[in-house]
Image (tube, rainbow, N blue to C red; front, side):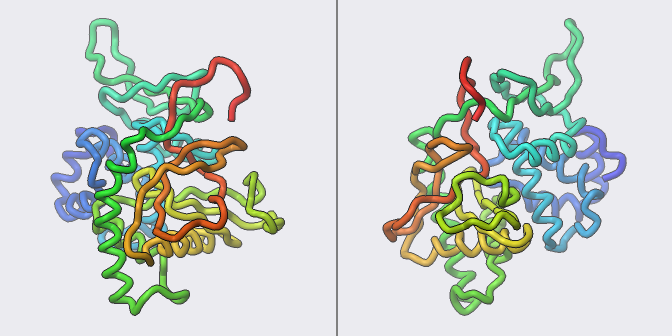
Length: 302
């Protein structure tokens, strides 16, 4: 919003607008710390004017996109997540000027995105520093305990989706799959993250997919991969990805597991949401990879 310059300004602004404050608070993630939520909340408020159709209390595709970008930005700043270059450039511009107190510092080999804060003088407060994170640094898999840590959330989400589908008359092709997924995730105090990439930029597509027009959408929640969809535009790709994600909830339970996937031409371990049915084919190549380790000293960037 116009006039919002820093965290203190955001708090004062929201104190003067209690209805907006209540609405914006509904987007806070279940596991977000106060520091993480304060920064992401400021990101949302600063960028609302760039999405004219975003109105407090009203759901829209523009709101979904803004919330997804806010999660991408927060995942990058606080977790060191990497995304396609076009996405990185966009969130860099959208996050310009947001100050994060005592942020995590991720090792890099090159300058990357910066959450730009004020560098303190030698004798000043050191709580405000810049974060420099390289989007091409090397990746490692999720920690072994990650599936167990994520499972309780997806157990709750499974129940929410089950009730939503029952009220909608069951799973079918005529449902608004993304709206069902979004509303269920938000009822569990989390946000769906969508990453879009032009189809022509994707390597390792499934056999038989030779067309190069259109877009690919990958859906995640809390870093867990849920589905990929292809479409003539972003909206169609998101709808297909949402449908694929909801298919997982058709069984008796869902399980978070560590699985092997392709990312930028190489095999990585990823968190994936699965049903009980055996898979007859591999996963689509990953468009994003929310797990980062120290960078390699040598070798090409992946």
